[in-house]
Length: 427
Image (cartoon, rainbow, N blue to C red; front, side, top):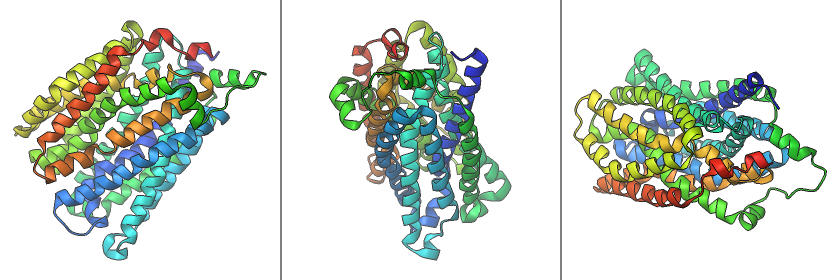
């Protein structure tokens, strides 16, 4: 068993890589307002953002494939090995975007390279989530598993926050014109360099005891595979899809799309929208371990049920109130309220999924169903929202988000309490 100090070092090491992975992923969303015109023909802003959102969704489509391949790899070769490979792929994707030509320079080649880069990053992140969730959940002790595993979303949010902080900094240093012309490339180049550093860190973290015990067992154990997952664990796989659907849609609506909503629908300047989201996401990040620690005391279900009920009831009021917001403080309060709601999901969803599966198939079981739900609901959030806005029915999106959260609420209310039935301690 690792000492508390060694456990902390490994969790920090695994989390640091997760932060860089998601920084690279979210840089795309944060900077879309500036690079969309470089990759797509000159149209109105909504049309350009819609094209950018379509490519963003392509990355999500690839995440189930990455989750399938990388989940099996992490189950067979170790959580650490899976984390290291995913980092390498994310680095490659970021560097491709950083050096890609514009549409004016290379025509259709430019958006093609953008799509290829997002495919590589989608494959990477598909495997990252499962390996990371499994690593943190297994590395954490039983009594504080909710707390420690919540650091996955701390680093996911930190990656998004770091992308926004970089955006705000470049807005101040370079100005709008330079940022739109070439400054956005700095963000992707920095992401590639940070990935190299994270790769080195991940090479030095320890493998989890759970995986080492599985490796040490003499008897043959079932091999992780797609068919094994859905043949032997169909209920758990479908459960992950159902509980993820509302949570991931809410997360991407309240975070990545919210920045564009504030600028494109509410009417704030791009700089103001970025600053509102930066401060709100900083608070959101702090909420994660607090909620994770609470789940160690009261269980996972109460937090998920609270998210489901509040999300289903309050999404419409929050967005319609934002439509009328004319000062940044009002918008900040409303955005923060939405993030408080989704914390009931984000803080504990990783550990809930990990606790459902036995060790030999845990990384795949966490990653693949989650990635499927993410591709359908999370990755399409911006595209659906912008499509409905373009068609003149923007408020239909608020209803859509509320209904999907409601479906997940039914799942939360009827599933078992994984804190009590956790399979992690039975490996």
